[in-house]
Image (cartoon, rainbow, N blue to C red; front, top):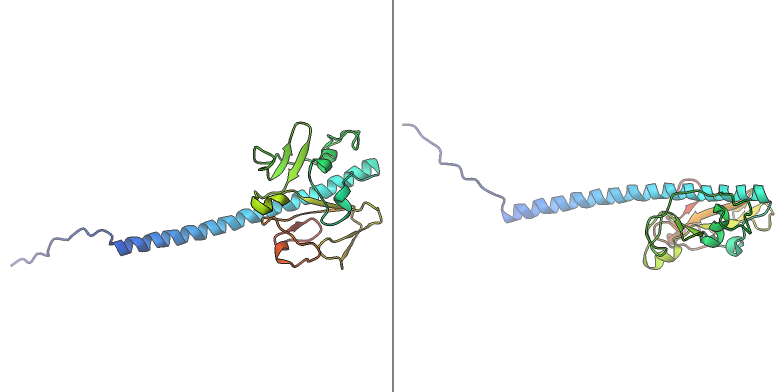
Amino acid sequence: MKITSPPSRNRGFTLIELLVVIAIIAILAALGFSGGAAVMNTAKKTVAKNDCTNLVQAIQAYYDDYNYLPEAPEAGTAPGAPTTNELMDQLVGFDKESNPKEERYYSGKDAKGKTQNGAYGGLFYTQRSVELFDAWKKSGIAATNRHYFVLMDIDLDDELTDPFDATKPLFGRMAIAWTSGRDGQYTTGQATATKNRDNVYSWRGKQ
């Protein structure tokens, strides 16, 4: 007598199994997003480091040509002069009075965003004027610190004071530049303060 097995039933996912699968997918997606965000932030810090270095080089080249520094009232005290049009117009050649040769000392990519209030990641032009914004798109309180900051040796004594660590004078530098990083916050005079952890500096090594 031939024994046959009962016909098999197609069994779909139970509700619990489906919820488990969804939970696993959500966890994997979150891990992937977190990793991707970290990579993007690292890339932006690299861009910011290059921008800071280029700013310092632009100021040095400006001084080499004119034997005076760009006019920036805030550049002699911490946190320094922000890269608004007051400073940048001189470095890109728009300010004929301060830069009569109209030499372009700073070059960079155009900013993202269609308005001045939302611009980030480059040079934002308004007719014949320009501002430089750092690499991060910031909102709320952080949006007030979207520019880079430049501190210059305005008394030409070959010494600058680190705005975050006054115990370590900086010798032989015409200028330094920095940004408040992704969080848009900083605390001067405290190099290890929480708000300064993601700052990017021209005068320090890898952050």
